[in-house]
Image 1 (tube, chains in turn cyan, orange):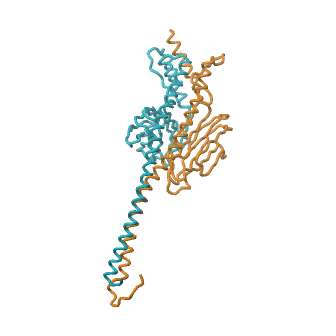
Image 2 (cartoon, rainbow over the protein chains, first blue to last red):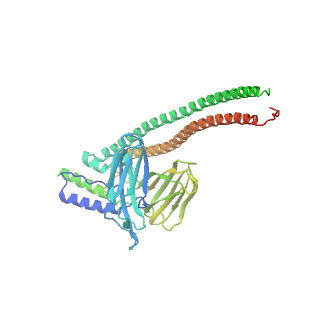
Image 3 (cartoon, each protein chain N blue to C red):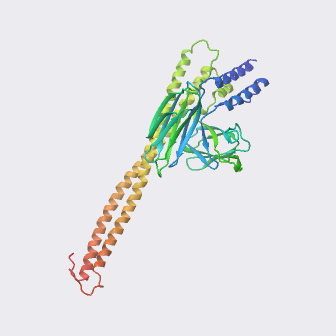
Length: 230
Length: 216
């Protein structure tokens, strides 16, 4: 994950530009996991996370060039539409980014969040029957922290930074365990509801059976008596 | 001047982090695989990197999926059909693009949710020490071992959460099924018993002039 360049006022000018330049070079040469997506296809990923957890997603797209028979580095005019839904199906992020983008959001309810990506290409000739290659990297919670930035901002020594990382990790473990408790409660409620339903429905069905049987006998008896057969 | 030195130090450390081999990438994703569909992921790996692919089916049908891992030449390194959970470690013997695919083509109408975790190489060191000549101090090595232990705690938590999600989705399925079946059965009971009576009555209808005694 590329470290974002901090906008510190005490950075010397040549140092900052060199760093930004090098970072940009290295960013584009670092490849991550990628997959192919069709033109109108929508790819969704699910992240089950506790509340107050930050998620950072980075993506990079490459379009297949039929003439050169390879994937181009950057595509002009091609963007990706990113939509994030929270566990209650409410949209919490819905934005269009360029061919390279970075999206961030923090969860406010624990549960399954859905991150959906689809291309916004209106020029159908762009794809020309090919596929779009999407490099995607999603970092959750503690992994989303940029320790180099934190060290620079809070001016931490190495040992302090290590301890800080441990603190963040333990924090996340604790959040996950809280979420686990909440999920277990839901599971227990579902099981108890099933248990009750099975019980009630067995009783109701037995009663219906008995009632129907009695009604049938009485009805037929009166029917046969009316027909003078008994 | 001191602050300038500090900033330069961070600059070099960040650059060094980027230049180290076996850099990053742990990709962990959960996605939905529709029925009769196949989803492939690709990654460029450098020779000699130790990689681990782990996957688990979270919801859907019989909780199984086909998985296949191929190296850049197309040789299948790992292939399993209808597996619920597995973990596969390998060392990259060639440079190039490795491909792994999940297939739900054997299923006609259930779509599956699949979780996978593809670790390539080791995690980048937190604060790389390019000038380090001494070994880690006791405090620092204690921090490192705590960090590793916490990483495995988080890993176990993830697997536990996935198994619990499986159990929970089955329980919720069962709950709705019990409700529907009970209502359905009650309705069938009523319909069958009423039609039985109506049918019997129709055997003794007054349309026939001669009433024949029918043994009850």
